[in-house]
Length: 267
Image (tube, rainbow, N blue to C red):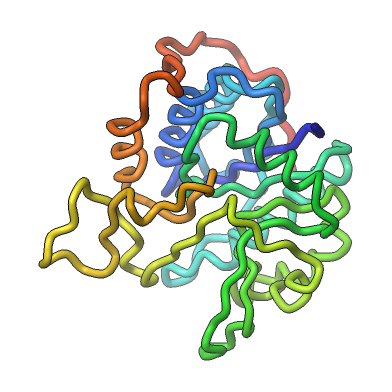
């Protein structure tokens, strides 16, 4: 089984979500023999970046942080900064590593222990260069007829192929979908439910008749999936914590040692 890089980007608005996700990963798998690449917007305060870097190094065999300088969002539109983060990640991976990488945003949720080994093995045992989740669209609003969502595994050499789609004019995954779809695998290991732009999926134990279409329960999570996107309020993690059998849950990391990050790179 090949080692994967987990690229976890975050900015000032979602660094708490990145921390929550890492803590949840630590509960499921306290030690992960893969590499963590934290992609922190340069505008995030240094102390926060140090804290998240330290947490990552407690979980993964190796970890590092790069700090690309991203443009500010325009009228709440994050296409520009997200594209910069993705492009800088691809460039760094190709220049500094030999492994392929998983792009995993802070609103992703890991669904079970052993998730990353399962993704690595599945990627290694299929013939395509890109490995993630696809869906048909109605083609409106300049969407591709089939979308390949950003939460996916990419080859080490992706930068040369995909940098042209990272202009920020629109979401980079919608920009590259027409190119990636014929070169990609649609895997059931990923479950992507975006929801409405301003009404992302949220979860409850039991859905009531008055709940809107964005409200789900664990019955909406496929049993064969290991990674969910998207859930911004932490409700899916909360439900998984309550429902997961103790036999498959590892103990959480109770204390995080205070150590200075060894390596900080400008991207």
